[in-house]
Length: 490
Image 1 (tube, rainbow, N blue to C red):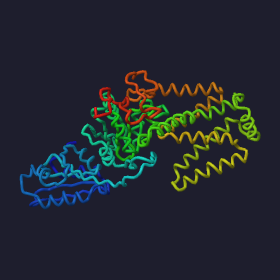
Image 2: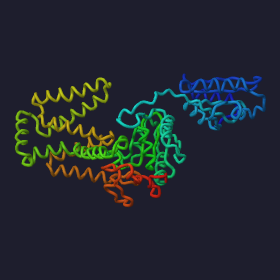
Image 3: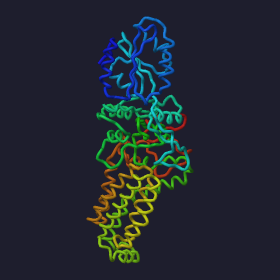
């Protein structure tokens, strides 16, 4: 619907659209000699009141000059309104969206357009420390729920005019702002084109968090493993951009989305590059081992205890048998009980307030575990197996990958309980085959361990081990082939 030249018609349309919206402020007033009628509308509490009072109202009423009324709004835009961002809008829906976005819209009798003045002033918290990706060395700042602030946190790290930003709106009702950021000289054109196309095809009424975007952009939505990466750290997002990846900054969420991905990026922590390469290579190798242990250890214990006790050292087998004499459940039942109990404790620790959650961890891990052993419900060996499995999952720095490993663990438990070691190998091979079948925007998920479609420029500089920074001369496979060199830009 086009904006009418008749101010009264526009006012009727707007008042009907915002009927029963008590936080929408509307004001009709006149300027100059009283012949020029204006209508101003904005949403209270999400605008900067000082901007409206000092740079719009004061200037309109104090600096107004007599001129041809048909061109008065153009004069306001060019000479009167002292705000940096002012634009013309011709559609009524654009005006309604601008009001809900935090801008102020001015209508004037005799003009078939309105002025959209940027007066955003959303309430927000200050820049805090990262909560889920904590580091000892390195920056401590984290993203906020305000998209504009998050963009600034990235731009202060990459002061290059090659860093481009495209704005989009997704969600038919929420109209959530999304900033698509990329390095013009590093990103693969096909990757950028595909991401833009997928964003434009999202058809949902509301996008309330970056998790929505992650799920809607994933190609294999049935897979338990993440095919996009999310982070709350600006330095990690900046690093992804310099690798030729695309970063999606979504409004109202303190987490950004990075794509494409490979499996090894989920084992990389921000601190890996801020400390010496020897210790960080050692820790990263431990993460890979921990991932295998988190998946296979419960199933391995079941397979050995039930089907292949002869493979267990004799002294250890005797001790395990002695601890299980009065246990009323089978080995499989014990493992499932302890694994589910650990899942409940994990969820309880997340949902409760921080001072209480640490107490729950101590009570659940020590007192309940000890009481269960003394009561003869589970054996000490199963408690150790479950605790070690849980600890190994905490070593991995990406919570989305941890969730996939947690679900995969139950597949190994189920098949090991039925087929023994043969079932364990079937489960592990099935998981490996599934990982090899995944891809992220044309990049094999298991690259460089599996590079069927990307067989050129294979490098191992930053995979299981992290080489010294002086030796990391090439960007990852995400970068377009002509810009793989790290020194001097492209």
